[in-house]
Image (cartoon, rainbow over all chains, first blue to last red; front, side, top):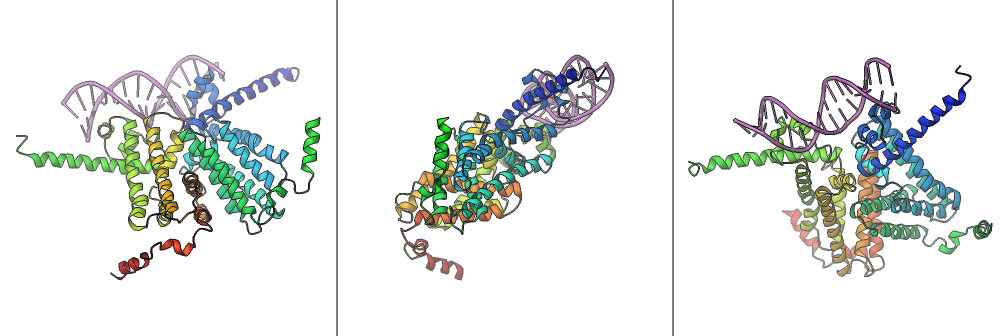
Length: 234
Length: 234
DNA sequence: CCTACCGATCGGTAGG
DNA sequence: CCTACCGATCGGTAGG
């Protein structure tokens, strides 16, 4: 009997996964606006028209729900900030600029209603040891590590001065981005975003200063423009 | 009868004010580590060995307690970061450096156990309109405004280049400080503090670049060293 | 400042 | 996925 109706079982599993996605979609909004602690089971259940027990059964604990929400948010972040920079921008400085641009656009476009989920979660859990804090710290390290890696690449490609310290520069760029998010959310105006863009631009110019002309950086081997035009022509 | 014992009434009022101070002392610790929302009346009452109603009567609402906690924290911040810079440092660039140094020391020394209360509160309340959010925003504007003002002074004193934009520079310095707090709290290591110091130093050097020799900035009218030596000799 | 209490909501469980 | 329930805690009030 069980073997004869595999498609019925599959449909149930599929439905369960869809419900889980719906839950995590609402959860990311709540987490970004009011924090991971405001992510209560009763509230989410009411919002989605389910019972508390029904929602709860998908995760098993509030902590597991918080971690699942962080992981879902990480996927969204990778897809909207990191992946495009690795797919469309050349390695090194162009990719670094793309990461910073995408991050600021990710804030400006309100990919998450309340701004960067990880900035909020980091502040919320930095004094509460446990698996949630560890997950937040791991995601943050992953992001800053990616910045450092791309900075190292840019240096090796001769696009940044040889004495540039990737850890130092990644810290400064990340700080300017955090400052943009912080000001944009609290003061509700775009000035912090503009200032972060300008600050990052000038900081990168300084890191490249006297090393190579800015115009040469965009097309280090001269092939980018040709490929772009081909893509557009299709 | 009432008029005959004014000293008794005064003692009661004094005791009430002392209790209020004790409450706000604990409240600032809770707010900095776990946020203004974790500032529950029952928890504070247990911690201080009082009844909920007794503690509650000092403020009248949770919101009023949160705002009183922010105001108490502002006093601590002014006393440990702003006042020393205005009392001991010369106007302009030396005072700007003192503000940044004091801020980073205020984080390193854990003046508040969980880091900068206002950074946390800003993130926690940026999506929750109301009096608490307004108070946080006002305190933040006050701080960034002070930075801008001192930057303007430094520019007028010829210590920074004439094309320096005080709003832009204040944003960048504040972002580096926030980044230091953020990293220090989440990653529990001092590297972010060192990187913020270095970033601020280099940013200020650049803002002064080609305008006046760094050595000349410390003693704009040549009298500071003499006064310092006199102080030490006493 | 206290005791005693209110309705609402919390995370989580039993049993289906 | 549901109903029905648990003890704990929330902000706040009555009355002293």
